[in-house]
Image (cartoon, rainbow over all chains, first blue to last red; front, top):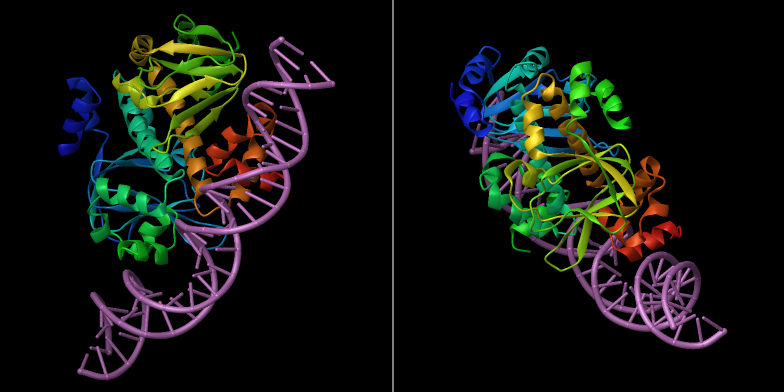
Length: 186
Length: 186
DNA sequence: ATTCCTTTTTGATTTAGATCAAAAGTATTC
DNA sequence: GAATACTTTTGATCTAAATCAAAAAGGAAT
């Protein structure tokens, strides 16, 4: 299992704890088009993506669906508010490719929290999520659509081959038409 | 001390741990205009605001300063990447009012992580930060300047009396002129 | 008061990106 | 292959918000 050994290093986990983790983590194959969580339901897991690509999205009041996030290899996804407070989420998380994830369910996560080094894991996971959000927020304020697009393909070059244009556009907060024009070089 | 007793309930901490916390938490008065952290320096604390108001901001390439966050009573602030990895932050955090904060330094935070219930604290703090960010990101995508403004004053009514218009405008990602016109009702 | 300085408002113009609409490409299925 | 659906591009127009500029309104200091 690739995942815990990476984690152990990054989150500075002890040998015993990272062995222990394996008892709680479940490997899961997710076919393209399947969902990790859905609007109206409770998200009961944290997911670590080993392979594949996911899109988190929601429906705006206007009715159109808006991409909140993409998540690919070596990142975490969950609907944090739903996971933590056991309440329905407003988001969908769909596999855009056949994927493999490692999952941990809330009750096991709670057990891990109470173990030695559990805090390091919790903090690490939340840190990674927070960092991604911080970068995104900074990248949107007062940046033109074009520079946001350039920033995306710089640190995520494969996204263009892997996701439809419309999904990418709403992630960037622009319309598909505008994104198409940007790509064409105006 | 008000802070730990709140925290104990919210983050489901044990009696002994929430007593223990008090040994690590330092109360600090921060005069208006003073900084909790600054660009180029390492942010070595997590701050919990008991009273007052802070603005986190950075300088864009254009040279203008942009408000990343406001933080008022009962919220946490830190420069998470700097705090976790001991590297210089890019942000400033300035007190907009005479304020009182509770601080914990990294080395003590590490000690807490290793204690029983430390994970609950870590997860709780990070959860609160993440939640705020998620809401902000959702509120910006495809929302007009006016509705973003309305959303802000709805869950933060006092901000108008407490922060200059220019700071609020850059937080919303709009110019001060536009915000002024929105307030005037066009 | 008067002056100086900061913050906010108002006005005129420009522009990035939305919207509406249709055409062109690319896949998938029969 | 034609027929069907998506997906992406191109075109024309419209609009929200930026930009540039200056006036007004508040505060603080003399």
